[in-house]
Length: 201
Length: 201
Image 1 (cartoon, chains in turn brown, blue):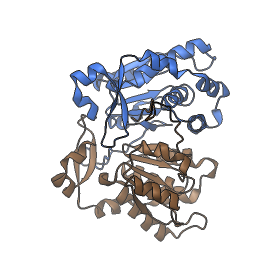
Image 2 (cartoon, one colour):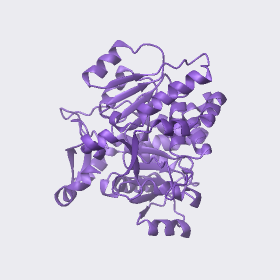
Image 3 (cartoon, one colour):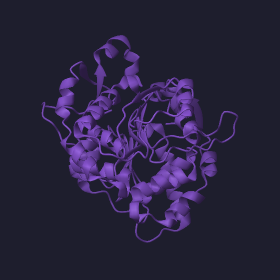
Image 4 (cartoon, helix red, strand yellow):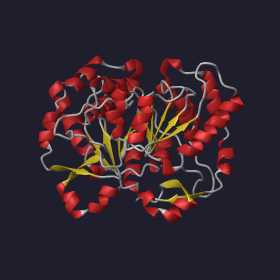
């Protein structure tokens, strides 16, 4: 946990997370579009990558932040205003999910513009992969979307086929880990073989 | 991350987190009151303790779940309906915070009844300890409280003196940890001396 109790020179640094910020899982965060005032906070997350769900180019100052912190950007351009076709959306979300669940990309921040619809849809599909019941998935989506909740997003999440994703991930094995006996995590074969230390992050 | 892709006998287990469930930080979760339908989900968190913020006795079936999973219960009885005196509330929250930030109690779940006011106040004070700016602290509180947001809680969080808590925690040292150079965590001296492995959870 990042308890920044004193700044680098002993001075307090006030942390400003982006609006709609939250931790999704160990190593997975979500938020609205981060601005320079949020960079000091983002530094405390030690991000390895960012999943950006809008088609607009990433601003230069954000790219500079990424370069200087060695953070990799994965962009999946999903239209925010006009409703994307179901097939396009499904392809983008499936591709983003593959990046998201790969622990080699963690810690990862997911964001779109407001952190409501596109981010909410991706997190919703992740929850389905984690076998959350649909009412809990919807409750979480609505938490972040608030009054802007969209029925089309809920329908998308509900009908998203995770079995297909599971079949795609044929190179992934399951492995128990952590100090409890019940905790599992997805790991790639090559990761297990070459970099076992990465599992203890 | 607990990807339960298949159940113990190869069957899918549907996970039902308690309403208002969320991850606060690595090893810290929050929710409303968990019921037996949520126990399968709670198992995946490998909890070491629960911080319960209501005065009502813990139900027998919940106590049985705690016993069988070796989870320690820390109860701080804060009245939900009648407004507790500021001094009583401050004492309870301060005591709960000390338990909360002690990594030896992690993973820990904080809950009250609805996961809105008492839980929100405790998490709000934790965020202040993490130097979050007040508007972000309030935004998070309001996320979970929704239309039930209480001005008295926001005022309590705003005026809660964390400097006092920092002074109380004289036995705690700060230590860099994680694979990034900027990540810090609070650790007790004895923990560092006796059980260094606990720092890699």
